[in-house]
Each structure stands twice: as C-alpha cells, then as structure tokens.
Amino acid sequence: DTAVSQTPKYLVTQMGNDKSIKCEQNLGHDTMYWYKQDSKKFLKIMFSYNNKELIINETVPNRFSPKSPDKAHLNLHINSLELGDSAVYFCASSSRPGQASNGAFFGQGTRLTVV
Amino acid sequence: AQKVTQAQTEISVVEKEDVTLDCVYETRDTTYYLFWYKQPPSGELVFLIRRNSFDEQNEISGRYSWNFQKSTSSFNFTITASQVVDSAVYFCAPGGSTLGRLYFGRGTQLTVWP
Image (spheres, each protein chain N blue to C red):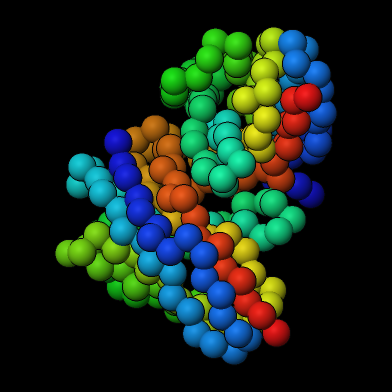
C-alpha cells in the first residue's frame, strides 16, 4: 500500500489551462505539504496544512491554491498555467508540525509540463 | 529560516570506492533535526536518516554512515563500498522543530560507475 500517493504522475497541458493534482496519505498524519522541484533539482516548500488548516504559505503566486478536504488529503489547484510552472510537484506528510523529528514521507511526484 | 550547503554538485566514483557527501547547515533554532534523502533516477524521494540536534552520536546502517558535528554545523554522509544502485541525487535537509518544514540543499548527484 502506498503511504503517500499523488495523481497524476505526469501532466502535460497547455498554457492558460487550469489543472489539479491530488494527494492522499494513509499514514494517519496530521500535516501535509506541497513542495516544488525545479529543473535544477532544487526543492522548496510551497504550502503546509495541519488538520485542514493552512500553516505555511510561502511566496507562491495566488494562481496556486491548495485545498484540504480532510487531513488525509491535500490537493493543489493551479489556475492559468504558465511555462514557468513546469516542475515536479511533491506531496508529503508528517505526523505533527512540532514533530519534524519524524521527517516527511513523500509521494512519487507529479511531473507537470506546460507547453 | 535555515540554510543548507551541499558544496559538491556532482561526484563520480567507481564501484566499491567509498564516497562522502558533505552537508553544512545554518540554523537559529536551538533544537532541530537533520535529514538525508535519496532521489534515484526514477524520481521518488526516499528517506534515509533523521538526526536530532542534541544527539551527536554517529550512526552506521549497513554501508551507510553519518557523521554529525554540531560544532562545525556539518552532517556528512558516507557510503562504503559504493554500488551502481547508489547512483542518485542525495539531499541534506535540516528541519525546524516547529511547522515541520524541511529546507533542502541543492543536492549532490552521485554517479557510481561499474
């Protein structure tokens, strides 16, 4: 059973479109994250939710909107996609914000290509 | 905020060689955690190790070992008798005790040649 699963794994879309990436974790964790990995492999946090509440919101264009219907799911919706949004997006989860000691478990990533 | 430097962008070794990946971090937190992740060519991020800032005991796990030195803010990773399957990008990532976010280094691309 996959602990953190993202769909889709690959997403190719045209500029200007709106798309969503879904993430689910079955670890019973309270906290979920979205990270973005650029073409140079640099990983940076975008958002974090704890029990459906937004706790981290980095400097991300407001075209990106996370949504957490429950603590096991954290979806990422992107409006008006731009070429620069092309990247690999990773979902992750951990037990509690203050329990960073447990590390984060990552999904397999979603490779988004905007053409 | 925290900062991490992985000065080695790329390392190439021949199989069975030992290799050490360097990681130097900066943090204002008194309590923090340090992680290493592996990203093989398939792209997933694999958790390797967690270290607490108050525990400087070095750790060995099979062919992997970690050397944590708080005085120099370094958390280096050594692979003994490297294998081709070790070829991957390795990330060092300090994490604060609050919010749970990880700050990733730029990664070190390790290539092990047969």
